[in-house]
Length: 163
Image (tube, rainbow, N blue to C red; front, top):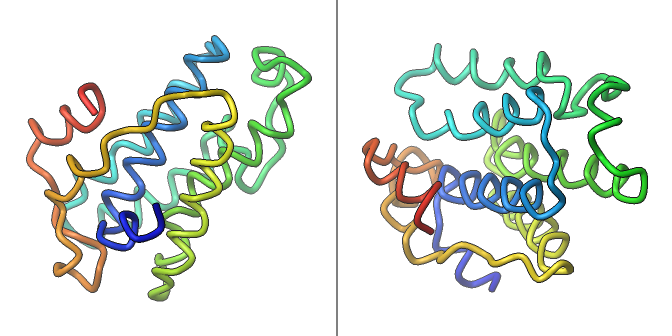
C-alpha cells in the first residue's frame, strides 16, 4: 500500500484521507454541522488555485471546532461522538489534517504517507471500504513539488462520491 501512496500527489493523498474520514463518520453515524463543515473544508484542497487561497484554506482549520486542531473539541460536538471512539476520532481528524500539513512549510512527502497510513489503519479496523487509489492519479506528483495539479470539478466530485 505504501508504494501506491508514493505514486500519489499531496492533493490526492489529502482527498483519500477525506474520503476515509467521511466514511468513518458515516459508519459511526456521526452527524453534527461542525463535523460536516470540517469534511467540506478538507475537500476544498482540490480547488486551491493560488497561494492566497492556500493560506486561507490552511488557516481555516483553526476555526473548525470538529477538527480538534489547536483547540479542544467543544462539548456539543463531543456529544455527537460516542465516548468509546472520541479519542480515536480526534486521532483520526489530526491524521487527516497532517496528511497534507507535513508539507505546508516544507516538503515532507514521507510524512504525508505516514499520516495517510494512520488514517487507513483506523478506518480499516472497522472494515470501511478504502477508495480506489487508481482514480486519484489524475493529480500528478510532477506538479508543484509533489503537491500535484488541481483536479477539475468533475474529477473532484468523482473522487468524493464515486471512489
